Length: 508
Image 1 (tube, rainbow, N blue to C red):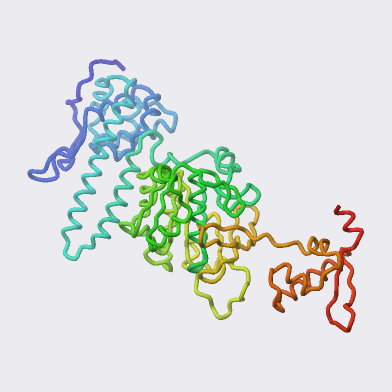
Image 2: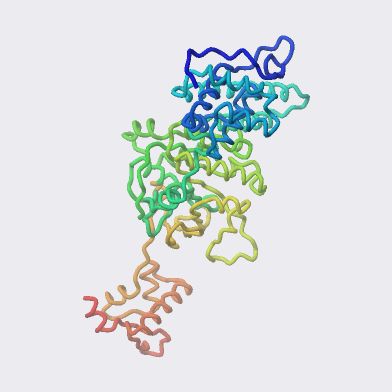
């Protein structure tokens, strides 16, 4: 096919529809389009299969302004998929087979397109022009629809805003060039298992015991006042590089944190201030952004808002404090499902997510001190189903000592841990339990259960419960052959245990 100076094809025009070749009505402007660019693309694709392969990731049939051009493009793709030529002769046969040849202007119009093309070399350039015009038309349509909705009596601004946001998101997806919206997140099976499934360094914890994994959210759950924000603030400071460990586990430093302080911002500020020194000002101004108070809308109305916030503030870590302030109805599957989509969109964008959430109120049949399970988390199961890790804090409001259970694990289970909060400094540490055998070894005259309980609790008069716990520990050592026992003289019911000499020698 000859190459020549490109001129818009004017002869043998296809049948047209006035709706597309003119404005939508009297006095309305012509919708954005570029017929010459459309003709250049189609002509180039008739010239060589290389042009088809270059253009197909950029354009969809709906991107062509003239319906006839969309029909021709579909036939071009059909022929290319079959490995057949895409020249005017082959296209005429294909369009005739589906009874569309006359509708597009006949064989003469196909030959006109082929002869007028500037060549296949710049086909992707012309395809981008067609794509941009199509995106402008879609945006115009969204604007018109928004105007129509806002003019209806009793219109709900939040519903209109949510519809507009969804429409804009869809439009943006259709407008993606390169691999196209249907391929931009698709990977082959090998890359999926080797890259997505590869062991990544945890954000918090170790590869064997991961509390917070990169690419997966971590949910910290508990009743009010048990220290969820206290632990979250230490994780934030660690992500900012101020400390290396939280509860004895390493934390990977990040770049910038967006903290959504929606639940009582002044209280969050006072709590965080405990960890801050005057010399920290520069880093906090540069690497920590705090959103104080409610968001413009809830995530069940605008699921893409979370990822947009992270992108706008250039944050690689987002902290939600707390979930109840960001979802409209926590017990509604549809609302929580939308929140989970928001969560996954944020994670797919490359940001990490820490979520603070509340638990259900204690029920009469709940076992006191029992191991917390996921059904203790308030709301529908979508909250925990979409989270990578779920940790539950148990204890009373304001307690210095609380329990941390790993209810949903990534790798190995962490804990349970006894956590001791320093409310004055805003720090937390893990209470390392004393080793009964070590205490027994260090006691030349041995120990009774009451004496062991006193050493383990630090109380001069330990409770009966603590004494029973110590008695069981000593009994276990005796049964394992690590201790001997003697009845106390004078008719005492107390039994005195001593570490066996051979075990002492082995250890030393």
